[in-house]
Length: 203
Image (cartoon, rainbow, N blue to C red; front, side, top):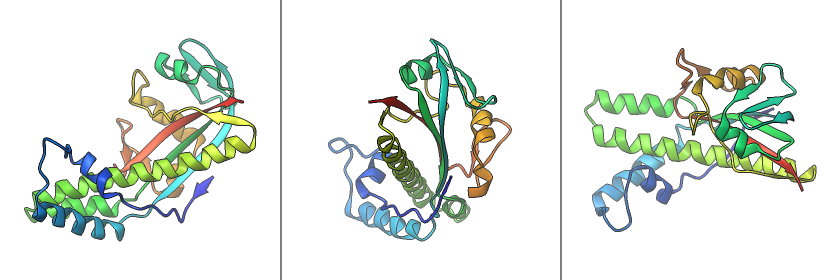
């Protein structure tokens, strides 16, 4: 299911976390704070949050393998299998903020504005996490309506979940409809995109 018209707020504190500012050890100077806030303002006009998600039955969750209604979705991973143990349904999603912010980062590098490029990159990471959280909340609400609770979202590349399984995820979703593609090495394009699975447990 496509989700468009997503509204998010880019949180200043989350951006600081992405940029590595620690509350005690790193001093945020007034000029740097001003620059970050300027870039957040620009970023708000560059992002185009979209998502695609689907919910389905899990037919089996063993010690190291997950199978589902979809023949193409057979995942061999101990970490994820342990995480989804006890789940009988799940949702998969891909979300993105689009490519315009990444183009802005490239432009800054071309102009020699490395600091602004670094800041905008952190803003993009914070923004796509907000989009992922938004979609996660939609899934939680859908699950609750059907009498389920959800477990924390889990993305390819964490633990032993191989990034190559992005192909399986893309086979059951329609990410091209929101402008997301896979590279040969299974990285998502645009880079500021997130894919994840959310398990459902019967209450």
